Length: 111
Length: 116
Image (cartoon, rainbow over the protein chains, first blue to last red):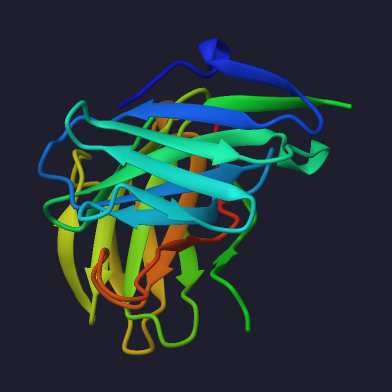
């Protein structure tokens, strides 16, 4: 769905701490989910994806958890670094091969 | 390997004019997607092309159109520009239909369209 950027949810964490970014999705029939990272002035960067037949997937320093019962997705970033500061979007794949994006969460990492 | 490339980076047009935005997908990718990211808003799905055909379009008026060429590159055309069309237009490509094997969607850096 949409959100107003000025009111973008913000998560502020200390460098080295773990970050958890949450996302509620809307369509129980969605079969595929992706997390993207977007830095200012750049296009979204693929981080990690998960299919609906899984509930957890791990990458390098990142883990995505999927809870289909409550239609909830989370992104965990281990040992958060200043370079992780960005806006993070979750996206769900709907019928018609169309990604629907959440409103985004701004992650700020304090050194 | 080159990623998704878009041109131009910035485009300034006057209300009522037409804009043409271009996208080159990652080599081997056949699907191209267009998204609009207006200031302060999330990404809104515009169009999906695959194998030269328009496969799906989002909730946008007909003055938003495009095409995909035999080499899988794509154009987005916006006619009769309105001030509200000012946004970052993002192109993404994938190897095939999303959720398949190795079919992640990767984005370009976008074209910043400003309508004055």
